[in-house]
Image (cartoon, rainbow, N blue to C red; front, side, top):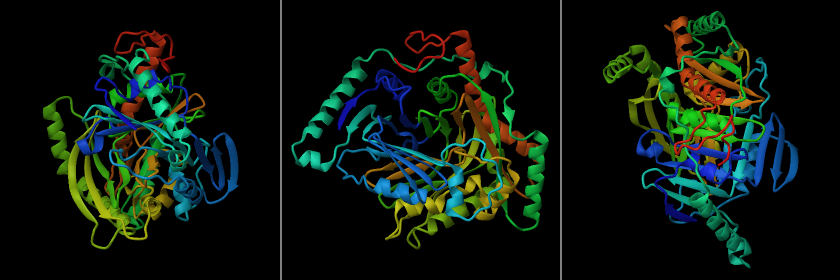
Length: 496
């Protein structure tokens, strides 16, 4: 590992200087939030192993060799992750090598017994992870980067050629970052405000169908089946926009604590999630539920008024407390008795287009329990299913017409040394087969107004649609300029 001051660099510039765009990589970037949430970003590149699954069909490509299995995909992934056990050294960041990728929402059907009535029209892997020995950690407080190349203990204690190669590789990476030519963010000017949704993406439900979904959900609530459920709609549009260029736009339009850019080759995740699903640091388990939304105002005064309206809304408060209790119960399944606590309750957080109520729940992982038990206990998140969770998931399966895929699943990392941090996939664009998909939803309770829930869902999708529209407009006009003035013709901004 090598740590160097790099105040002028960020993950986007480093990707360009290393000529990584267009090759498999995973960037988990902290774009906005408290110092605890937004201090570090992680870039993994040149994966040595790829794991993906659909149902019980599992494919593992390790060092160029493909292995196929019929197996429980979660158990098989656990076995692969555990085969790469690492040793923690002082000075290493919380993630310095391991698996980075996603679980789709539909993995939940293998953790619980659920009906299968929705259409799987996207046909994406339900589990998709890449394993990285080369990682760059960005410290946004100290303005340093750590370049890490992992080698096996045998390489260090034996003849050491791999260790020497790792040191040489660190030097090569540092040289490229320092001398690899220009790289920078695009300049969008005031487009984030001026672009006015000039296209209408296709939706998997009409407005009237969504309102009917809400009405049917409220019938289940009145019947006592559930207290709340989260219903969603999905927007889709054909596009030729370069996914990395789109990410560069999104990180300016909607900076968030859990941003992600993942290039799997056959599909891309371009995300700006604000929500942590679950994190394990040592034996401390945490989850950070978000529930309660208002639009942003046009001034600071209006923001304050909307935040006050949100935090004093009895419906929003009751829904939030109910979901905090659900998360407490989830952690209670795997944490030591008496250790689960709510250390932050109903704080206001502002994002580019919306205001949220957020809480933080934590506990000490019980002896004999692992991070795999912890993730299974919390997945999928209660804020994007409902309460009770399993019955809400059954109703979602009945009312939504298509499978969710990565939406409301989880993106993040599983480190070699035992750490794990996974977000909830919301405010995220899936790009596959020249299509961009945006999905968003709303929590339905007894007094929900169908029309309002529809518009809340569309409001949550707005920042993503805005980023896509800006990217398309700039590609069409040829106005692809980075911050140092270098012009990039067409949509090809993938490499420096």
